[in-house]
Length: 229
Length: 161
Image (cartoon, each protein chain N blue to C red):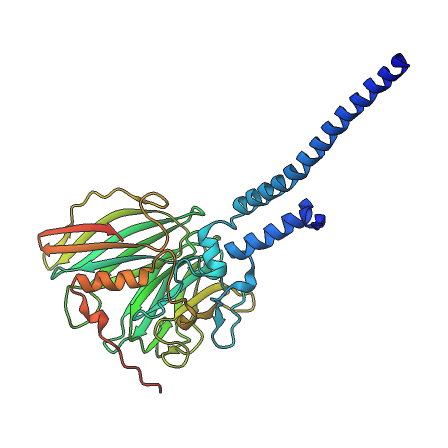
């Protein structure tokens, strides 16, 4: 009996040990699996750019401003979404003096984006000409060597109507197969009023205003008066 | 008794994914800075910018100044900038210029600075190393270039704020 019991007892003891080990392993797996899943998701998010602060800002905002907001500027950005190099994109604007221009040169598809921050007030802004929207303005050189001169193709944008102080205007230049000059201009706006009151990583528009102020460029601080036509 | 279903990896992973997505902005519906279209053209393909990096050139001399920079982007492309500023005056605001870049800048190389006088162009001596994104410059900052002095004794300083 003892012999018959002991083996059983031994077997039972072995089974109990194995069962405990199995339960322990199972419990450990239950804890490890979620940890691995969370780690995998974190790695996935990090590698796909979701934890990139620039992308975060582009999608949810709050880190850096994308429009001047309360600051006395108008931001004009140009995006090259063509296969051509934009040899000349003359941004023309009216600020009450002789119409000045800021010409963007050699904006390649790789360079893609640049812009100019204009002191407020800016009464009108366009590409090429404030008087003639159909005048050839944008000089584009395509990879095959062909060149095109494209007009802005629309009336100048006006303060108080299409934009306000603190906004961002985006001119996107893209290829257009139905256009005789192969490219066309789309305009977009980021309303400065939609910008948050503060940013977790600084506000370059506020910084640049303070820099100008400290260096004696006080004219930028002169508040502009815009009369809506 | 605790609900064991929430402890399953799939559910937990989903909850974490949504939570992280909301925290990091990967959910597009949380975007407060929608880009609106102006006029009849579609703006659906216009990207929301990632952020702003500003370069300001301030000319405090009585001569026009030319500042030449190269902005190298993350994608390998380059934006060459030739920034002309008029002589310092209170009569207009062309004595300074502010350039905007999206935050996909990899580095900024300073090529040359010169002032233009009636006697010709005078190069402004400077020795500036390139500004490298993530090391010497970050998204949301301002690169301030100040050109000062009286020709021919003109100098340039660069600071990052």
